[in-house]
Length: 128
Image (cartoon, rainbow, N blue to C red):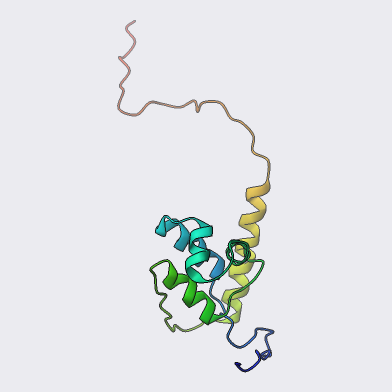
């Protein structure tokens, strides 16, 4: 039996993927494979409802489980290290994302056709 997952100071469990959107990865895996959730779950040794929970973000798979599910679909994931942005940049990005999400929820007014010149058309001068 494996060692129990321990909680890190940031609340993540060891063996849990941090800053990887497993839900997005699994949804993209399913889309690219062309297989159903049920078939992918069967191949990956889990249930379709568990796959759905992972894909919706309700539950987060361990690194080993995500690897197994990706391989069942014929994929491998790569991990790359890159410098983390400064805290101020992360906060700014979070504010921008929140603002964009807010503007997406605003009602949109229906507008008529724009009234402006048609480019490429010359009007003949008026004769007097």
